Amino acid sequence: MSSPDVVSLLENSKELDRVRKEQEEILSEINKLHKKLQTTPEVVEKPGDTSLARLKVLYTQAKDLSESEASISNLMLSQIDGILPTGPQGQTRRRIGKEGNEPKRKRVKTESDISRLTATMRHHLEACASLKGEQLISCQVAARVTPRNADKDEWFVVKVIHFDKESKEFEVLDEEPGDDEESSGQRQYKLPMGNIIAFPKSNDPSSAPDFPPGKHVLAVYPGTTALYKATVVQGPRRRKTEDYVLEFDDDEEDGSLPQRTVPFHKVVLLPEGHRQ
Image (cartoon, rainbow, N blue to C red; front, side, top):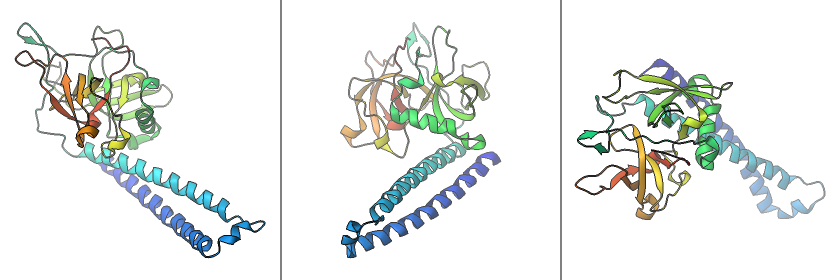
């Protein structure tokens, strides 16, 4: 656990307290106006009465504060996830697919752009980008870490540690590089926005896209921090769970593709123009 993580978390908790206190004040004023209108509804018909106009302003403020509360809470959840252990030590990325008897890591080639993301995910990514300094710490995203001119691309789960507003580049940390990588330690990358895909909010299934059966997606392979192309077998809403049932490409076992369960917040739209 690093002190910047904790400091940022505490700063956000203070901001959350401030927002909630302001919400209480707004709610109190709304309740007073409600009581006034319920007891003397005819007042709104009097010339010069501003009760409804004031109520509209208060509703708008309450809505904005509610959205701020949700945004701060989601950020704090991401920060806590980043502070807590992510899994057993020594976890490696599973490589799927085979050429002869040698396993290979499957990559996804894409010419994706942030404009091609869904509105919800784009909003979440922009929210991450708009944060300042230490508040960016622990925001997890999917990142294509290979250069654009590479023959094949690789997508990993990484943690955002900085965003340069001038160059529009993310500085990210790959905390669990695979056992076949040149260095065994953590690796940092500087990536353009087009190499980043934001995950849906883990505590809000309704904010995530509802991918139908047969849809191609990019998903985190169970037990790893790598993303691969997969096909939706069944979605979470149909099954009334928070998991997708997926079949990953090149994941054959005994001549067939096994069905894997993946949480909805680890599944994103497969970028357009992909090549693998």
